[in-house]
Length: 116
Image 1 (cartoon, helix red, strand yellow):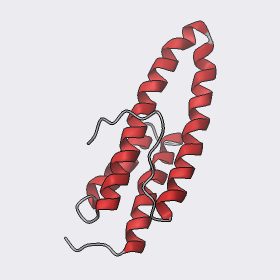
Image 2 (image 1 turned 30 degrees about the horizontal axis):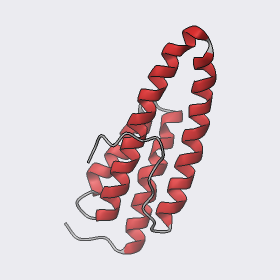
Image 3 (image 1 turned 180 degrees about the horizontal axis):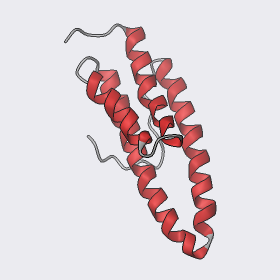
Image 4 (image 1 turned 60 degrees about the horizontal axis):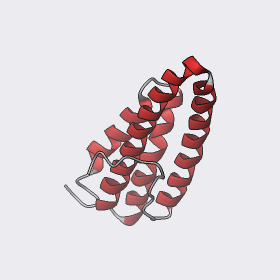
């Protein structure tokens, strides 16, 4: 596979993060979007590989947190947790996308590192 130039790396790295926003429209799009980009481009760029894994780890972690919040709906607090998680995800994805577009490796907070 041919290697990417720096601008392409930054764009695909940013795409790994932005693809997660599809989860607000498509069920499980927050995992499928970054997964597809990561699988397509991980061998062409170390930066895209790193940011793709980071995005996937964050989205998987968020899914786990949302399941816990859904269970906690039984005691009402889950409704507020789900709203807070949604806002948190939106803000973090935007920050990660901006960092990736400038070529910086971004690390999401509260992320379980499941994919190494």
